[in-house]
Amino acid sequence: MSQIRTIVGLDIGTTKISAIIAEIEQGDEIPRLVGLGMVPSDGLRRGVVVDLEKTVRSIGKAISDAELMAGVNVDGIIAGISGDHIRSINSHGVIAVSRSDNEITHTDVERVIDAARAVAIPADREIVHVLPQDYVIDEQTGIKVPIGMSGVRLEAEVHIVTAASTAVRNIYRAIGRCEMDVEALVLESLASSYALLTDEEQELGIAVIDLGGGTTDIAVYYDGSIRHTSTLPLGGKSVTNDIAIGLRTPIEQAENIKKQHGAAIPSMVDANDMISVPGVGSRAARDISKNVLASIIGPRMEEILNLAHREVKKSNFPETLAAGIVLTGGGSLLAGTEELAEQIFDMPVKLGYPKGFDGLTDMANSPIHATAIGLIHYGIRHSDEVAKKSKTQGVFKKIEKWFNEHF
Ligand SMILES: Nc1ncnc2c1ncn2[C@@H]1O[C@H](COP(=O)(O)OP(=O)(O)OP(=O)(O)O)[C@@H](O)[C@H]1O
Ligand SMILES: [Mg+2]
Image 1 (cartoon, helix red, strand yellow):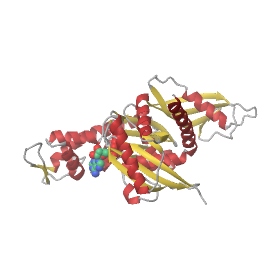
Image 2: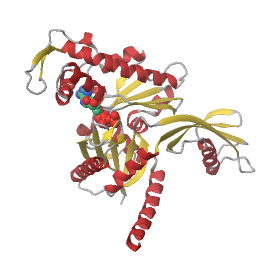
Image 3: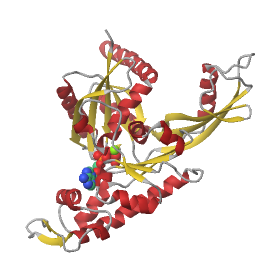
Image 4: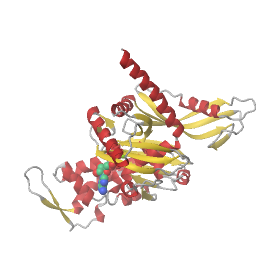
């Protein structure tokens, strides 16, 4: 009988927390989604936990909804991390190959990665990922898999992602309070890439732009590796706030109006097309043109996409990102966003719907779910790392339990 593994992706977003449960047969690559729980996110600001109690409640609810749908109980999850505290740098390490016959081993690769990660990190930050980009053996550059090759000197280029330690700790604490283990903590934009990009696109050059509620996350790939990541403290919520102020209507109404009638490019909208806007408090509703609405939204979307463009350019991509731009996250659903991004980036742009899964295909088929599904893919592709981490956490838990019982 083949073994079935259960994997849970938990996307802790600024507007929603979503938990997706998947099952996968050993040796298979395509997970089957069996449970999805999504609740409005409470207690987070720009991707960072600011109210632990509320966050614990939201996470607990999202997971139990997903469990109910799936008819299983879960105890370990792959969690996403984002927020404007995330920083990333590229680094470099060099070692001498250890074996006398010069064959590069797994240990050499571990050593060179350790050498590359030995950069000064401020005391209040910690490393979330060390992602290998390329290896250099003696003078030969652009090597992806050095194990088994021959050389004297091994170098590694890596992309290091760091996060504020308090933000990391609060995620662990919130999930721990829900009596779950964190099997892996994954940068959200990296996770989304697992659900959106093919190997070929990463080779050609592509950028993922996740337009979330409180943040916009950027990840740039070329020559088959991640090259640059960044998070902007702006997103769909900024657009909604602008509408609430501009049209003097409550936030909740502004959000509905944006989703139903909003557009990122005013010239796309007929000035005679009218909508009714509810007033604040006892004020009467008013009719306004959709064109007026779009002229409130347009400048903010331009600002966000221009800042994202600046970040993409920082990655020093060779000439062009041949596979263009993938827009994902709820903000990408705003009408006209694809067209506006095409104007700003001057590259091909498409919407990022998550790929590579079975089960719940209708429910999960939205850019909103790219991160959670990507977290599941991460869990499948990095099963060794995930297993190791949950084992050590299990040991720590036992020690903690023993202490609590005896002291
Ligand atoms: N149909 C739509 N049209 C326009 N905007 C939309 C639509 N659907 C969702 N949004 C916007 O998408 C945003 C939420 O997206 P998403 O669920 O990806 O964010 P999140 O993951 O909670 O946040 P973050 O990634 O910043 O932590 C909200 O600002 C919402 O208004
Ligand atoms: Mg998100």
